[in-house]
Amino acid sequence: MRRSRNEVARWRMLRQVHRRRARWLEGQSRRYKRIHAIRHQVAQQHRRSILFITQNI
Image (cartoon, rainbow, N blue to C red; front, side):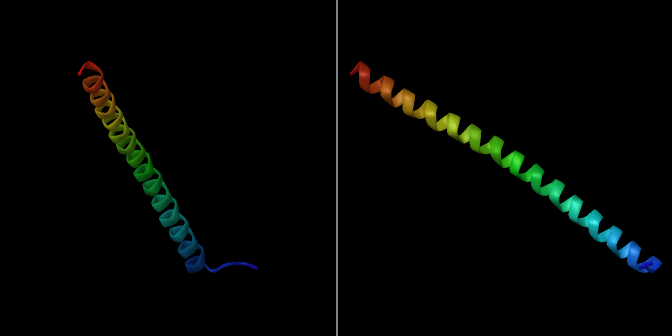
């Protein structure tokens, strides 16, 4: 079945919006992963330093 010009345009716009949103979400999760990794690293350093302090006493 042939689609009208407006219908085709609407589908294209919807697909474009969906792709843009998906790309944005992916970027957000990547950023979150990086932040999470940095926080984890800081926590590990903190634990190690506490361990080091208690061993020297």
